[in-house]
Image (cartoon, rainbow, N blue to C red; front, top):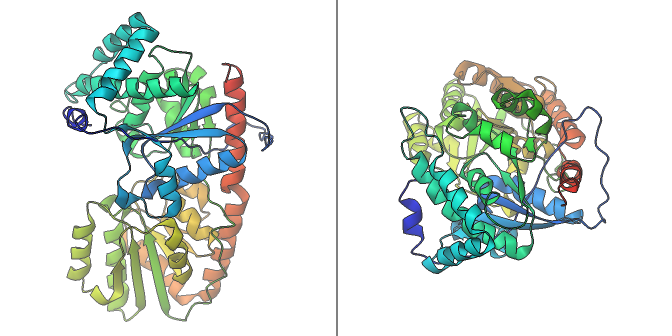
Amino acid sequence: MRPGALALKLKKTASASIPCVMTTSARTAPLPISSPHRERPRIGYLTSMYPAVSHTFIQREILALRERGWRVDTFSIRRAPAEQLLSERDRREAASSFSVLPAGPGAVLAAQAAMLREGPRAHLATFRRAAATPVAPGRDTGGRMRQAFYLLEATILRRELNLRGIRHLHVHFANPAADVAMLACRLPGPPLTWSFTMHGSTEFWDAGRHRLTAKIADARFVACVSHFARSQMMAQAAAESDWQKLHLVHCGVDPDHFVAPLNPGRDRQLKVLFVGRMICAKGPTILLRSVAELRAANQDVQVTFIGDGPDMSAIATEARGLGLEGATRFLGAVGQDEIRAHYEAADAFCLPSFAEGLPVVLMEAMAMRRPVIATRIAGVPELIDDGESGLLVAPGTVPALTAALTRLLDDIPLRHRLAEAGRHRILEDFDVRANAARLADIFDDELATVGG
């Protein structure tokens, strides 16, 4: 957040939000599935924005935890704008969530007064500690200023947590929401612990600025969405003793919701679907160039792009420059009530990304029995066995992607084999209910030792 951003937002009024969860344990023996009926402590779930179009998996995780008897309140740093609320469930979740921002002066002053009543010394000590937060040498000169604004946000959040009797907070992503959570735990009030889910991969590019080492040390535990993410966090940990905090926690989908029959397909025709943020790092221009090569060779390939983002205009311009107006559709963001129909209409799914954690859109396509093509990066090979449950290509390579698309064009039986194996892979390891149950067991173990 830019140093002046909070000051502008403080002129507006405050709103409300609720939390979420997702996981798989990194222990050698599988965790027992916890009882869905046992009463559990109330926990908070914090994200930068909840709900959000690109983070539907967080909402699924929360709902799966609630089904298992967890009382999960959701909290959002910023209120989700109306255009992000594309389904009735999104709107319900937004209405029941507590948003820190925008916050009026009254909310800020009330939070400060509450912290001073709870413990003036601890409150002032936290302010001094935030002001002394190290700044990365030669850059990030606004680091201390940002921490000051995070602390103001943390006081608003902590007051609400205290009022609700919440003693543990879980965060998705190691972004500023995690900084706010870490500061909230240092503010006055009953004991409060926190944990977070690490997705990557952008945080690994600038681990110092994201303060990964400090966050690992401070958190009660860290849920890592892939072995790759866990290994990178092991590298960032200050000591090997912190490795025991790092649990493998897959994201997941509901395979009962994302289900469809095999697409019989038409010979020498391929309708490709891309779902993701419209940014260059997701590789949409690589896909466009591959499609242009195939179209130039008189191959019938069409692509539907679903998603929105800052590079949408540039990507659409690239499509026009390649002469693909008749072979491409750009539909913008689509809600979960509609997305299944687009998967079902596709012959194949392609995500030629340069940077990922463990993409949930790939899981959705695989659950829907659609053959997938993705790049061999980060945690993706832990989801897709090349040639078995999908096709993997080197990132940023148009010829390799063109060859993979050609294989699916030429071989309908291959499409069907990949599609069936892909769904089996989801049922085996990426069912959100099973992963939420494993995460619930981690919460049980960790919170029991700190009094829940």
